[in-house]
Every structure is written in structure tokens, then in C-alpha cells.
Amino acid sequence: MRRPRFLWPLGLGLVSVFLTFFTVYDQLFHRTGVEFILGDQLDRHRQVLAGVAIDPWQYRLLPELVVEAAIRSVRWIGVENPTLPAFAIVRVVQNLLIFVIAALYWGRLGVSKGMTVLGLAMLAWGFSYAGYGSDLAFSTYFDVLFYLLAAWLIVLHRLGWTVTVVVLAALNRETSALIPLLVLAVGIRPADLSGLVDRRALKMAASGLFVFLLEYGLVRFLLGPRPTMRPYGHALGLDLLGLNLSWIYSYFSTAAAFSVIPWLALVFWKGWPPILKRFFWAIVPIWLVAHLFLGAMAEARLLLVPHVIVLLPAALLVVQNGSRAASDSRTVAG
Image 1 (cartoon, rainbow, N blue to C red):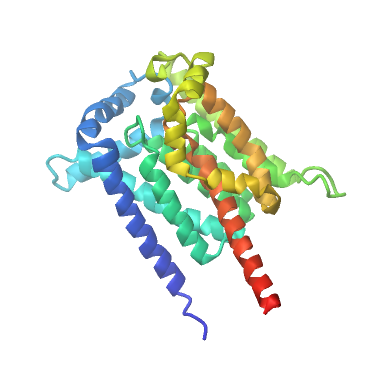
Image 2: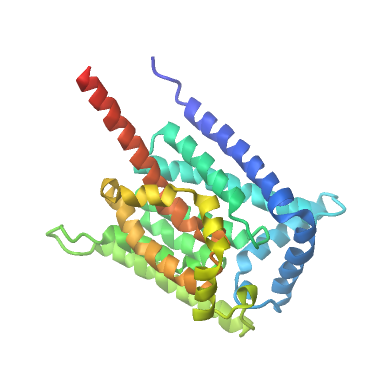
């Protein structure tokens, strides 16, 4: 007997809601803390709106505009102290959308429903351990959401919509510059006699990159230069690279957030579907190198994008295909 079609959407919804409220509660009250949110994070929020925050936070306008809209909406309905509820609402929406779109994207890659649920649980685990040294990091989670949207649209062959994603992502975080490379990656066809590049993919990738450069460049020009942050007192570049390589917590934090998932995926590289291999080469090497020099690797949230887009679904497919092969071999033996 076939199961009713509504069971999977219903089950995915229930799992996503459960994991959302679990992770949001953990992030609000355990990993970040109300005192920090209403202190340092609220101060930074106000600085960005006032145009006096440091680089790069000053140019990450989208999350602060969304949060401010949430604060005003909560205040409008009569809540006396709207800041914490507004922050919580934004994070709930972010996490819920991430879980749902991740499931849809992985499903298009061929990940089974059971493995998808397992993957969402692994992702929730990563959320809980990826918050070292940060506030709620709205821009990071919007970054994950926009990359998921772009990857999902690509596997749906809706390349034109990725430009719309870039329009929003460019106002969120500078790392969204790599989204057009995902589009370009699916258009490269070295084994196809009709040409090396799909012209439509090239056009959409070029359009996305142009939109990002124009929009992000305009924001920086209009707001003007700002002092550059120094993570943990270290200058960007070689000084920060030295910290990342020598600080034991860089390794502990990433291992706690991602466990053996990256290694499991990479060991079985040959079993990856071609689309994930292309996504890997499009963003993972440059992402890792850039963050070694420009970010504190102890803040494992900085690696959530390659984790969700490439490594986690690859690991799920490796386990799934291995289980099927083992089942098939037992059937033949029997």
C-alpha cells in the first residue's frame, strides 16, 4: 500500500519545527545568552543603523533592517520590551526556513527521506556547537539560507531566480559573492561536444556577479570607509592565519560542530554525484582559504555554508548508497 502523499510534508514540517525551537532555545539561552544579546548585540545593531559600526558589520545591512522591522512590529502590537522577542522571531524564521529548504535541496540531490531527517538532526547539532565567540549572527544564518536557496534553484534548473537571491544576499554578507560561481559550475561541460560552457548558465552567473559587485560596491561607497575589525586582537591576513593554525580551539570547535562528516564525505569522493563535485570546486577551496586569513576558525559558524551545501549532503549520500550496496549484496548472497 502506498503511503498518503501528505505524510512526508507533514513529517518534514513537524521535524523542522521541533529542531527549530530546540536550536533557537539553545542559541538564545545557552550558547549566546540573553545578557549578551541585550548588551553587545543590541549595541552593534544600533551602531549599524547609525552608520558608525566597524567593517564589515557596517555593510551587512539586511539582517539589521529585518531585525529593526521585527522590533517595531512587536512594539506595535503592544509588547513593552520588544527586543528579545523580535530577535527570537527572526531566528525562528531563519532556522525553520533553513531546515525546510535544506530538506528540499537534499531531496533533489537524491537523499532519501530517512537520511534527510538524519541530516537535519546533524545540522541542528552543528547549529548548537557553531556559536563560539558570536552573538546570534543573523548575517551568517541568512548566508546559509541564501546559499541553500540558490543551490536548490540550480538543481531545479531555475537559474534565472538565482540573480534575485543575489540581490538580497549582497545586502547581507560579502561571502555571497560566491553564489554566482555555483551557477557557473553547473554550466561547465568539458565532456560535451556542443561546447565547454552552457551559455545560459554563463549569462546568469555573470549577471549575478555584476549585481553583487554593483550593489555591494554601492553600499560601501555610500556608507564610506570604516575601521576594520581585529578578531581577538589579531590583524586580518598572516597574523590571523597564525592564530587559526595555532589555537587549539580552532580544531575543537570545528570538530564539535561538524564531527566526522567532512572526512566521511571526502574519503568517499568518488561516490559523489557530479553536481556536488562541481559545487565543491566552486566554493569550498576558496571559502576555506579566505576564512583562514579573514576569520576566526574557532567560530565554526563561518563554515556552515560549505557544510550544508556540499559536505553534509555528500556524506548522507555516501552512507545511503553504502547501505543500499550492502543490502543488495545480502540479497544476492541469500
